[in-house]
Length: 74
Image (cartoon, rainbow, N blue to C red; front, side):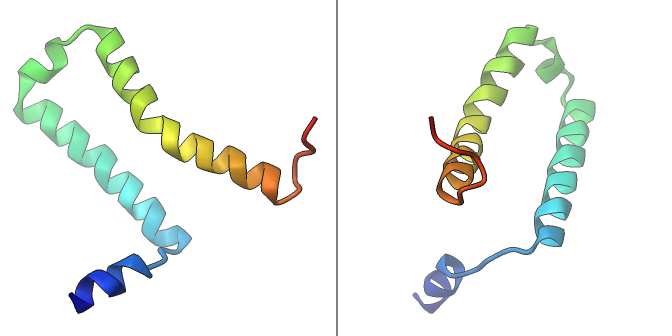
């Protein structure tokens, strides 16, 4: 259980986040290369999945902007 406590307090720096994004990007390209049927989906499925995946980070960023005083509410 100690590892779960350590994971809950972990804070990634900008380099960790950036490298994670790059790794996910290339893992996605690799998946598309080795499993071609995934590219057979219609374009709107990719758009729907992108929007679903982006909702939480986007809302967190918006809340941060409004609570930090960088954007005035109104």
